[in-house]
Image (cartoon, rainbow, N blue to C red; front, side, top):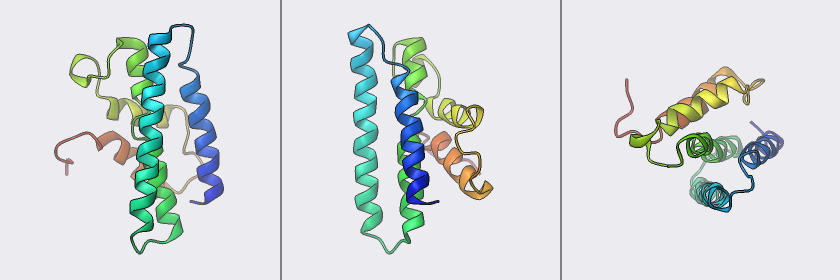
Length: 130
């Protein structure tokens, strides 16, 4: 995974989250809340990753996971008007499904695709299943 790949994925993410903005200011505020959260998680993971002896490709991979970790929140809020998984759907599972259905990671090595999809799917669980 390269810096150019991450740039392309950020562009896709921006367009995707932007599709949830509309005329309702309460809804827009919640979309922006998740957008800001994602930006903060990406910044934090960059700082953590850079502090470790990781190759650049792994840092890019970590930021890609951070970018997509809450992608399921946007359709979750649109449909259920809540970010509470218990009152709606598991946003991690939904996020993994979105990445697969939208073919966001097509062209990437299978190992990287699986890692990203599973990280998104299980980022909110207490224990990762075997």
